[in-house]
Image (cartoon, rainbow, N blue to C red; front, side):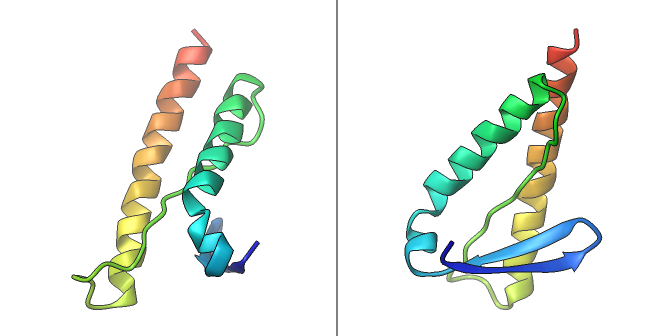
Length: 88
């Protein structure tokens, strides 16, 4: 990986990507999400992620974190709905 991983809370982590890691972030996120969705059916570990990049309107780094956090919670809802569908 081309970046760094930091634990920021109980089960929350931040990954800062640079270079090739940043350039391939979409592919990495898509692959990660495919594995997570496959884990739902197998009743294995399910992890939700939210990814955000610095935008021109961001005043602080916190703006990026809040956007990523919101996306993570949206993804969590999607994954919970998928899990409920596979158990019916």
